Length: 383
Image (cartoon, rainbow, N blue to C red; front, top):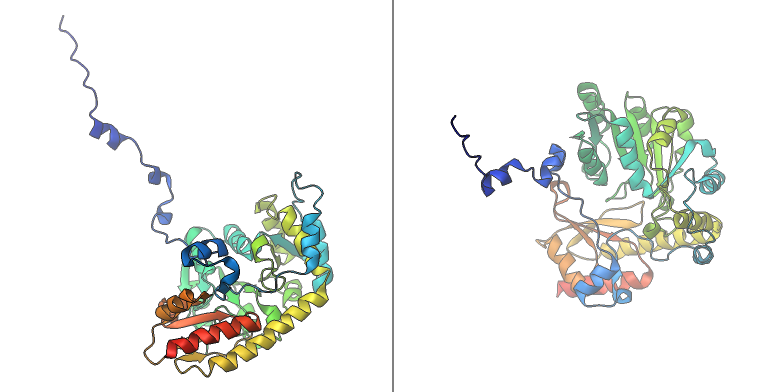
């Protein structure tokens, strides 16, 4: 009887080939996804610039430099049950928001920043391969989250004055049958607003309209939150990051038609708004006088900053209804170098290199002393 042939041990190369690599488990469309580019926090900037955090003038992320009302610190310092999970329905916050907005709490859903709600909407609405309409230049999270969720992005660029190209939007909806459109008013990064006539034209289309009102407090517009009761295809997003200086605590909210909100309740993470975030937001709403005063200070400083920027020969500032000002860099100057040179002086601004905004910078509105330091730096760059 013939003996059995010896079993050959697999070579190291063969074994390595047989074993799957970690990235083989990742969804295919995510393997080429570029990560979102966030703004760096104080601690990182402090280490990179060799400056104390309090010596850095941060005008790059549209944060509220005045911070929240004093009631927030008091509320955070007296948390009674931080070891207990938060209320999954954020009942206290939604009740406070109903009183603040005049819209019943059943239409309101809170989130870990408006960013979470943007992603949640997409997860509930979009099938892989569905299309959304994006109107650049605008908040880049819409395009990013759509890519994460396997959707296709149809871009309808804004007109030279940054207003919406409504006629083109109508054509795209008719031709491409997209599922939803994301609109920001005031728009980030230019500060322009959408008039009611244009918004109503878009709401008449067979498309879900997500209206981001993150900066509405700095404009003369009235929120469209109440419109969700008569427009079944409208969602309105708001945030505490700008108005109440709570960017670090991540709390946002949205107004939704009842026919939509029930599905978001099913799909959201159960404990998405932390105890600290809910307590802070409720405390901030207890002092509307502070919120109004801070808003007025920032609007007043925005006008001062705009007039000062008009006097810089290599900048063309655009009128803004928000807490930032977009500037085109002219006279052969380089936007990135301006940002880098100001950073060396401890002043942080935002620059853009994407095609719609190549050669532009965005400057957040700060306190008067922040404006003074910025202008000192800009004047030094002229020498």
